[in-house]
Image 1: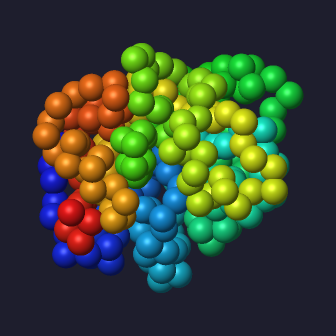
Image 2: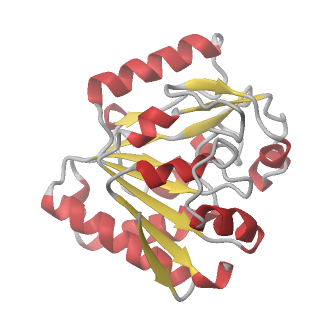
Image 3: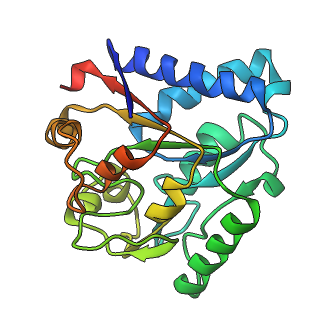
Length: 236
């Protein structure tokens, strides 16, 4: 893991955006896995700014959603679906055929995970996986546990995740998570990890210890050969 110490959130977002744009210029046809939440928001804004001046860079990219709150409606303004449509898909004019996504209210959640797994097998591996770190150390909805799952799966949401601002504001509270698994993430060609937020100091400190443990799923990123970690120093 290459750790880049950034002065603040803005600097972190700019450095991460520069990395994504550099790779897109070299190879426009990329499958990009996108996290949601505060950590990547400014990064996405910077990609949208670049799109306005150089739209040709983004013509061939494909987006895959990292995770989704289960048992909700994708139109609610705090779901991952709504977030991505607003912050990335609509501004970059990503066609539906270039977007792979969990349904937030599937009739059969297990079948939905199997469908997503098949999508990854067909269209993957992921070229760039953009991740944040949960305050309990989760990545996606791979929550701290005695065991971690490799493939797309239904996740039991932790108390910490259920207190997330996105979940707290929903009209219908999520009852489970849908997420890419650890193997899906670790098979990515490149991972960009964004570490920011004053409430994540404990998780960040534990991650930097390099101790690999299922109680901190993000620690497994130390096993990947190509991770750029952008650390907002104001979060330390």
